[in-house]
Length: 339
Image (tube, rainbow, N blue to C red; front, side, top):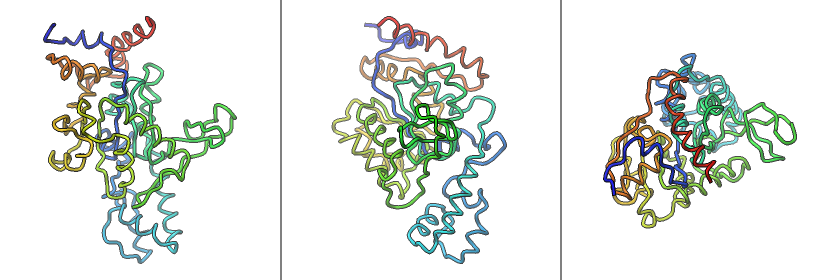
Protein backbone atom coordinates (compact mmCIF):
# COMPACT_ATOMS: atom_id res chain seq x y z
CA UNK A 1 0.00 0.00 0.00
CA UNK A 2 1.35 3.42 -0.96
CA UNK A 3 2.12 5.65 2.01
CA UNK A 4 1.66 8.91 0.12
CA UNK A 5 -1.36 10.34 -1.64
CA UNK A 6 -0.50 12.81 -4.39
CA UNK A 7 -2.56 15.83 -5.35
CA UNK A 8 -3.59 14.12 -8.58
CA UNK A 9 -4.69 11.03 -6.66
CA UNK A 10 -6.80 13.23 -4.39
CA UNK A 11 -8.41 14.94 -7.39
CA UNK A 12 -9.28 11.55 -8.90
CA UNK A 13 -10.70 10.14 -5.66
CA UNK A 14 -14.42 10.27 -4.79
CA UNK A 15 -15.32 8.14 -1.77
CA UNK A 16 -17.09 10.17 0.88
CA UNK A 17 -20.85 10.49 0.55
CA UNK A 18 -21.53 11.95 3.99
CA UNK A 19 -21.92 15.74 4.18
CA UNK A 20 -19.36 18.24 5.34
CA UNK A 21 -21.44 20.69 7.39
CA UNK A 22 -20.26 24.30 7.68
CA UNK A 23 -21.81 26.68 10.21
CA UNK A 24 -21.28 30.40 9.64
CA UNK A 25 -21.53 33.25 12.12
CA UNK A 26 -21.03 36.99 11.75
CA UNK A 27 -17.26 36.53 11.99
CA UNK A 28 -17.31 34.67 8.67
CA UNK A 29 -18.91 37.59 6.82
CA UNK A 30 -16.47 39.95 8.52
CA UNK A 31 -13.50 37.78 7.45
CA UNK A 32 -14.83 37.60 3.89
CA UNK A 33 -15.43 41.36 3.68
CA UNK A 34 -13.01 43.08 6.10
CA UNK A 35 -13.28 46.32 4.11
CA UNK A 36 -17.03 46.13 3.67
CA UNK A 37 -19.16 45.29 0.64
CA UNK A 38 -18.84 46.57 -2.93
CA UNK A 39 -19.72 50.09 -1.78
CA UNK A 40 -17.73 49.89 1.49
CA UNK A 41 -20.76 49.23 3.69
CA UNK A 42 -19.26 47.66 6.79
CA UNK A 43 -20.21 44.26 8.18
CA UNK A 44 -21.71 44.94 11.61
CA UNK A 45 -21.14 42.69 14.60
CA UNK A 46 -23.25 42.71 17.76
CA UNK A 47 -20.72 44.91 19.57
CA UNK A 48 -20.61 47.64 16.89
CA UNK A 49 -23.98 47.36 15.14
CA UNK A 50 -25.39 50.41 16.96
CA UNK A 51 -22.43 52.50 15.77
CA UNK A 52 -22.38 51.24 12.17
CA UNK A 53 -26.14 51.59 11.65
CA UNK A 54 -26.08 54.97 13.43
CA UNK A 55 -28.73 53.97 15.95
CA UNK A 56 -27.29 56.00 18.83
CA UNK A 57 -29.65 58.99 18.51
CA UNK A 58 -32.70 56.75 18.22
CA UNK A 59 -31.77 54.86 21.38
CA UNK A 60 -30.78 58.05 23.24
CA UNK A 61 -34.14 59.67 22.48
CA UNK A 62 -35.93 56.68 24.00
CA UNK A 63 -34.53 57.57 27.47
CA UNK A 64 -34.11 53.87 28.20
CA UNK A 65 -31.04 52.82 30.15
CA UNK A 66 -29.18 49.91 28.59
CA UNK A 67 -26.37 48.06 30.34
CA UNK A 68 -24.16 48.20 27.23
CA UNK A 69 -23.98 49.25 23.58
CA UNK A 70 -24.10 45.61 22.49
CA UNK A 71 -27.10 45.11 20.21
CA UNK A 72 -27.80 41.73 21.79
CA UNK A 73 -28.32 43.35 25.21
CA UNK A 74 -30.31 46.25 23.77
CA UNK A 75 -32.71 44.16 21.72
CA UNK A 76 -33.25 41.61 24.49
CA UNK A 77 -34.32 44.40 26.88
CA UNK A 78 -36.69 45.93 24.33
CA UNK A 79 -38.21 42.56 23.53
CA UNK A 80 -39.16 41.90 27.15
CA UNK A 81 -41.45 44.95 27.38
CA UNK A 82 -44.43 45.63 25.10
CA UNK A 83 -44.18 49.35 25.82
CA UNK A 84 -41.06 49.40 23.62
CA UNK A 85 -42.70 47.76 20.58
CA UNK A 86 -42.58 50.94 18.49
CA UNK A 87 -38.87 51.43 19.09
CA UNK A 88 -38.17 47.77 18.45
CA UNK A 89 -40.08 47.88 15.16
CA UNK A 90 -38.06 50.90 14.04
CA UNK A 91 -34.79 49.14 14.90
CA UNK A 92 -35.88 46.09 12.89
CA UNK A 93 -36.79 48.23 9.87
CA UNK A 94 -33.43 50.01 9.87
CA UNK A 95 -31.51 46.80 10.31
CA UNK A 96 -33.38 45.05 7.49
CA UNK A 97 -32.88 48.03 5.17
CA UNK A 98 -29.15 48.17 5.91
CA UNK A 99 -28.52 44.52 5.12
CA UNK A 100 -30.85 44.52 2.09
CA UNK A 101 -28.68 47.20 0.48
CA UNK A 102 -25.43 45.22 0.71
CA UNK A 103 -23.74 44.03 -2.49
CA UNK A 104 -20.88 41.60 -2.93
CA UNK A 105 -17.52 42.82 -4.23
CA UNK A 106 -16.64 42.10 -7.86
CA UNK A 107 -13.64 39.80 -7.36
CA UNK A 108 -13.68 36.32 -5.77
CA UNK A 109 -14.05 36.39 -1.99
CA UNK A 110 -13.74 33.89 0.84
CA UNK A 111 -17.43 33.11 0.33
CA UNK A 112 -16.83 32.26 -3.34
CA UNK A 113 -13.88 30.06 -2.37
CA UNK A 114 -15.89 28.41 0.40
CA UNK A 115 -18.81 27.49 -1.85
CA UNK A 116 -16.64 26.35 -4.76
CA UNK A 117 -14.57 24.16 -2.42
CA UNK A 118 -17.58 22.08 -1.34
CA UNK A 119 -19.80 19.66 -3.26
CA UNK A 120 -23.56 19.38 -3.57
CA UNK A 121 -23.63 16.68 -0.87
CA UNK A 122 -22.37 19.29 1.60
CA UNK A 123 -24.21 21.96 3.55
CA UNK A 124 -23.56 25.56 4.61
CA UNK A 125 -25.82 26.82 7.41
CA UNK A 126 -25.58 30.50 8.26
CA UNK A 127 -26.84 32.57 11.18
CA UNK A 128 -26.19 35.76 9.20
CA UNK A 129 -28.81 38.15 7.86
CA UNK A 130 -26.65 39.65 5.10
CA UNK A 131 -27.18 38.63 1.44
CA UNK A 132 -23.51 38.15 0.54
CA UNK A 133 -23.39 34.34 0.76
CA UNK A 134 -26.37 34.03 -1.58
CA UNK A 135 -24.89 36.55 -3.99
CA UNK A 136 -21.69 34.48 -4.07
CA UNK A 137 -23.78 31.39 -4.75
CA UNK A 138 -25.69 33.03 -7.60
CA UNK A 139 -22.56 33.98 -9.54
CA UNK A 140 -20.98 30.51 -9.30
CA UNK A 141 -23.96 28.16 -9.48
CA UNK A 142 -24.16 28.15 -13.28
CA UNK A 143 -20.62 26.74 -13.44
CA UNK A 144 -20.40 24.35 -10.49
CA UNK A 145 -22.50 22.10 -8.30
CA UNK A 146 -22.49 23.90 -4.97
CA UNK A 147 -23.46 22.96 -1.40
CA UNK A 148 -26.99 23.49 -0.12
CA UNK A 149 -27.61 26.63 1.93
CA UNK A 150 -29.64 27.00 5.12
CA UNK A 151 -30.62 30.24 6.85
CA UNK A 152 -31.02 29.59 10.55
CA UNK A 153 -32.09 33.12 11.52
CA UNK A 154 -33.72 34.08 8.20
CA UNK A 155 -32.06 36.24 5.56
CA UNK A 156 -32.89 39.46 3.72
CA UNK A 157 -32.21 37.81 0.35
CA UNK A 158 -34.48 34.80 0.93
CA UNK A 159 -38.20 34.64 0.17
CA UNK A 160 -40.65 31.88 1.04
CA UNK A 161 -44.01 30.59 -0.20
CA UNK A 162 -45.92 29.32 2.83
CA UNK A 163 -48.52 27.55 0.71
CA UNK A 164 -46.10 25.48 -1.36
CA UNK A 165 -43.20 25.36 1.11
CA UNK A 166 -40.81 26.72 -1.51
CA UNK A 167 -38.01 29.19 -0.87
CA UNK A 168 -35.97 31.26 -3.29
CA UNK A 169 -34.70 34.75 -3.91
CA UNK A 170 -36.76 37.36 -2.08
CA UNK A 171 -39.17 39.01 -4.55
CA UNK A 172 -39.01 36.25 -7.17
CA UNK A 173 -42.02 34.13 -8.07
CA UNK A 174 -42.82 30.80 -6.49
CA UNK A 175 -41.91 28.06 -8.96
CA UNK A 176 -45.21 26.28 -8.27
CA UNK A 177 -48.00 28.84 -7.77
CA UNK A 178 -46.22 31.86 -9.34
CA UNK A 179 -47.03 34.08 -6.37
CA UNK A 180 -44.34 36.49 -5.18
CA UNK A 181 -42.12 34.93 -2.52
CA UNK A 182 -42.54 36.78 0.77
CA UNK A 183 -39.53 37.96 2.79
CA UNK A 184 -38.43 35.51 5.45
CA UNK A 185 -38.71 36.62 9.05
CA UNK A 186 -35.42 37.56 10.67
CA UNK A 187 -34.75 36.15 14.14
CA UNK A 188 -33.28 38.75 16.45
CA UNK A 189 -31.07 38.19 19.53
CA UNK A 190 -33.40 37.25 22.38
CA UNK A 191 -32.65 34.82 25.18
CA UNK A 192 -35.43 32.34 24.42
CA UNK A 193 -35.94 31.61 20.74
CA UNK A 194 -38.54 29.12 19.55
CA UNK A 195 -37.25 28.01 16.16
CA UNK A 196 -40.43 26.10 15.39
CA UNK A 197 -42.89 29.00 15.63
CA UNK A 198 -41.87 30.05 12.12
CA UNK A 199 -42.39 27.32 9.53
CA UNK A 200 -39.53 28.31 7.23
CA UNK A 201 -36.97 28.58 10.03
CA UNK A 202 -38.26 25.39 11.64
CA UNK A 203 -37.64 23.48 8.41
CA UNK A 204 -34.16 24.98 8.09
CA UNK A 205 -33.30 23.65 11.54
CA UNK A 206 -34.80 20.27 10.81
CA UNK A 207 -32.55 19.89 7.76
CA UNK A 208 -29.49 21.08 9.69
CA UNK A 209 -30.10 18.51 12.41
CA UNK A 210 -30.50 15.72 9.85
CA UNK A 211 -27.19 16.63 8.21
CA UNK A 212 -25.35 17.03 11.52
CA UNK A 213 -26.38 13.50 12.47
CA UNK A 214 -24.83 12.22 9.25
CA UNK A 215 -21.82 14.54 8.93
CA UNK A 216 -18.22 13.30 8.81
CA UNK A 217 -16.84 16.78 9.52
CA UNK A 218 -18.21 20.03 10.94
CA UNK A 219 -16.56 23.38 10.34
CA UNK A 220 -17.60 26.28 12.59
CA UNK A 221 -16.53 29.54 10.98
CA UNK A 222 -16.79 32.84 12.84
CA UNK A 223 -19.68 31.78 15.07
CA UNK A 224 -19.21 32.70 18.73
CA UNK A 225 -22.26 30.88 20.15
CA UNK A 226 -23.58 34.00 21.96
CA UNK A 227 -25.67 33.76 25.12
CA UNK A 228 -28.85 34.50 23.15
CA UNK A 229 -28.25 31.35 21.07
CA UNK A 230 -28.45 28.81 23.89
CA UNK A 231 -31.36 27.06 22.18
CA UNK A 232 -29.43 26.90 18.91
CA UNK A 233 -26.51 25.14 20.59
CA UNK A 234 -28.92 22.72 22.28
CA UNK A 235 -30.50 21.78 18.95
CA UNK A 236 -27.12 21.27 17.29
CA UNK A 237 -25.83 19.20 20.20
CA UNK A 238 -28.98 17.07 20.16
CA UNK A 239 -28.34 16.24 16.50
CA UNK A 240 -24.57 15.72 16.91
CA UNK A 241 -25.15 13.30 19.78
CA UNK A 242 -22.74 12.12 22.43
CA UNK A 243 -19.09 12.77 21.64
CA UNK A 244 -18.26 9.19 22.65
CA UNK A 245 -20.14 8.11 19.52
CA UNK A 246 -18.22 10.57 17.32
CA UNK A 247 -14.76 9.07 17.65
CA UNK A 248 -14.01 9.19 13.90
CA UNK A 249 -15.54 12.56 13.02
CA UNK A 250 -13.60 15.81 12.90
CA UNK A 251 -14.54 19.26 14.24
CA UNK A 252 -12.86 22.27 12.66
CA UNK A 253 -13.04 25.80 14.07
CA UNK A 254 -12.06 28.93 12.14
CA UNK A 255 -11.89 31.87 14.51
CA UNK A 256 -9.48 34.52 15.79
CA UNK A 257 -10.16 33.77 19.46
CA UNK A 258 -7.68 31.84 21.61
CA UNK A 259 -7.69 28.08 21.08
CA UNK A 260 -8.38 27.25 24.73
CA UNK A 261 -11.48 29.45 24.78
CA UNK A 262 -12.76 27.96 21.53
CA UNK A 263 -12.22 24.39 22.70
CA UNK A 264 -14.08 25.15 25.91
CA UNK A 265 -17.00 26.71 24.02
CA UNK A 266 -17.28 23.83 21.56
CA UNK A 267 -16.26 20.98 23.88
CA UNK A 268 -19.62 19.14 23.41
CA UNK A 269 -18.75 18.76 19.71
CA UNK A 270 -15.13 17.63 20.10
CA UNK A 271 -14.05 14.02 20.61
CA UNK A 272 -10.64 13.85 22.26
CA UNK A 273 -8.02 15.24 19.86
CA UNK A 274 -10.27 15.16 16.78
CA UNK A 275 -10.31 18.88 16.14
CA UNK A 276 -8.45 21.65 14.36
CA UNK A 277 -8.39 25.36 15.15
CA UNK A 278 -7.41 27.89 12.48
CA UNK A 279 -7.28 31.67 12.59
CA UNK A 280 -7.58 31.93 8.81
CA UNK A 281 -10.00 30.29 6.37
CA UNK A 282 -7.11 29.51 4.03
CA UNK A 283 -5.55 27.24 6.67
CA UNK A 284 -8.69 25.06 6.76
CA UNK A 285 -9.42 21.62 5.33
CA UNK A 286 -11.88 23.28 2.96
CA UNK A 287 -9.38 25.70 1.44
CA UNK A 288 -6.51 23.18 1.31
CA UNK A 289 -8.50 20.27 -0.11
CA UNK A 290 -11.21 21.89 -2.25
CA UNK A 291 -14.10 19.56 -3.14
CA UNK A 292 -12.17 16.69 -1.49
CA UNK A 293 -12.23 17.43 2.25
CA UNK A 294 -13.65 14.00 3.02
CA UNK A 295 -11.20 12.15 0.83
CA UNK A 296 -8.23 14.03 2.32
CA UNK A 297 -9.45 13.27 5.83
CA UNK A 298 -9.97 9.62 4.90
CA UNK A 299 -6.45 9.31 3.49
CA UNK A 300 -4.77 10.94 6.47
CA UNK A 301 -6.68 9.37 9.37
CA UNK A 302 -8.12 6.10 8.04
CA UNK A 303 -5.55 5.02 5.47
CA UNK A 304 -2.68 6.70 7.42
CA UNK A 305 -1.16 8.22 4.30
CA UNK A 306 0.90 11.35 3.94
CA UNK A 307 -1.15 13.89 2.02
CA UNK A 308 -0.23 17.05 0.15
CA UNK A 309 -2.30 20.20 0.28
CA UNK A 310 -3.97 21.38 -2.90
CA UNK A 311 -4.82 24.94 -1.82
CA UNK A 312 -7.41 26.91 -3.71
CA UNK A 313 -5.63 29.92 -5.28
CA UNK A 314 -6.59 33.11 -3.47
CA UNK A 315 -5.81 35.67 -6.15
CA UNK A 316 -7.24 34.27 -9.40
CA UNK A 317 -10.01 35.93 -11.39
CA UNK A 318 -13.30 34.07 -11.71
CA UNK A 319 -12.44 32.67 -15.14
CA UNK A 320 -9.04 31.50 -13.90
CA UNK A 321 -10.55 30.07 -10.72
CA UNK A 322 -13.26 28.14 -12.56
CA UNK A 323 -10.62 26.76 -14.94
CA UNK A 324 -8.46 25.66 -11.99
CA UNK A 325 -11.41 23.88 -10.33
CA UNK A 326 -12.77 22.28 -13.51
CA UNK A 327 -10.69 19.05 -13.29
CA UNK A 328 -12.16 18.38 -9.85
CA UNK A 329 -15.73 18.68 -11.08
CA UNK A 330 -14.93 16.71 -14.25
CA UNK A 331 -14.00 13.73 -12.07
CA UNK A 332 -17.23 14.14 -10.08
CA UNK A 333 -19.30 14.15 -13.27
CA UNK A 334 -17.44 11.17 -14.73
CA UNK A 335 -17.93 9.03 -11.63
CA UNK A 336 -21.61 9.97 -11.52
CA UNK A 337 -22.05 9.07 -15.21
CA UNK A 338 -20.27 5.73 -14.73
CA UNK A 339 -22.73 4.57 -12.08
